[in-house]
Length: 179
Image 1 (cartoon, rainbow, N blue to C red):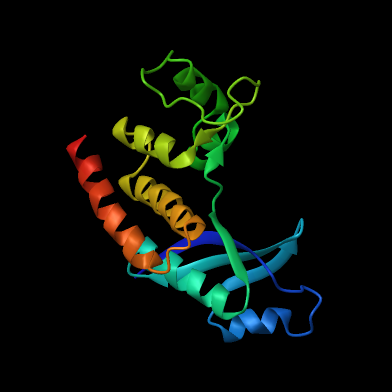
Image 2 (image 1 turned 180 degrees about the vertical axis):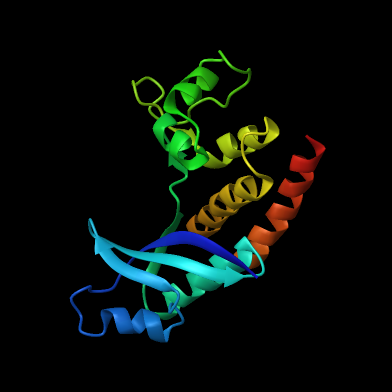
């Protein structure tokens, strides 16, 4: 068993309700911290499971059993260079050099705020690139992809979340190993 840390952002429950936290505990979120921030329910998990896909799928199911609507899984899939540096332990300057092609070629292009001074990248794409350049572990790249897949499944209302994640991750791992 491995321990996986992630957050589920949810909505649909009244945080002032007397049984707010107890609903999550009773639904199986006894390995999570529940908070309400900026209008969202934040369920921070430290879940032991066989795989990241099992951890996320069971947590989503538990949050839904509590009566909340799952909006997304985090860590946030969109990252700045500062976020990338923090997640990898590298410096912001190093990430800037990678993004400008000064340290290596083919760094992923930003996908949001492209014309601003603070563009955003898709974390799963950057994690894959960093793994291929031996700057990030395979496990970290797989976890980033699992969160991306989970969010896509949540947005498409795929009720077989664990199967969707596991199937896509098998293909992803093969691609990582072939690189």
